[in-house]
Image (tube, rainbow, N blue to C red; front, side):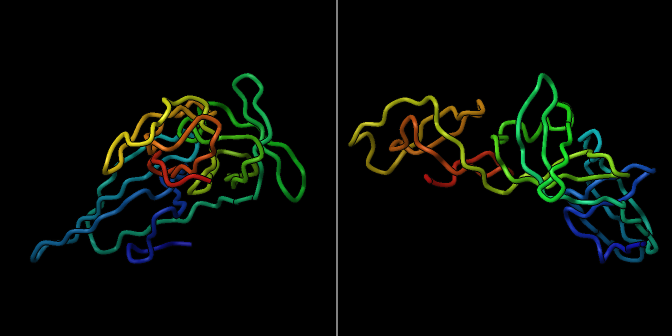
Length: 187
């Protein structure tokens, strides 16, 4: 199936040079009496590499990549491999550390994810927008530290360091935004 620029959306899988990519961002500019220029940022699903491409003209077409998404759950790590289990077939899929480099700070056991399959092979995962992580290390907050609120660094169970409010203590669970790595709320 071919798509024009008007049908393009963020997160859409596109076949670019024979490899599956996902659209990260796109922008279209048009100057008077000239063909439009489209700047599109893609992320390769196999390698995670970000590619910026510029397209000129009115008749730019894209082909959808034939990827399949399956509901899965992260179950365990074994060396440099991370194992996920399909929720319907209970089949297990290993992914390497290199394939998950951006998602590793948010992976906790039993996390529900979507596995992206290309030609029946797992190539990447999509994690939820927010993940609950336990705080393992932070400075204690004392009553009256500041009048307007403040923040302090906290280390989570996965090793991710997040700026949290002063009232968050060790052992509490916090919600973290996986797109930015920022603290959202206490759980």
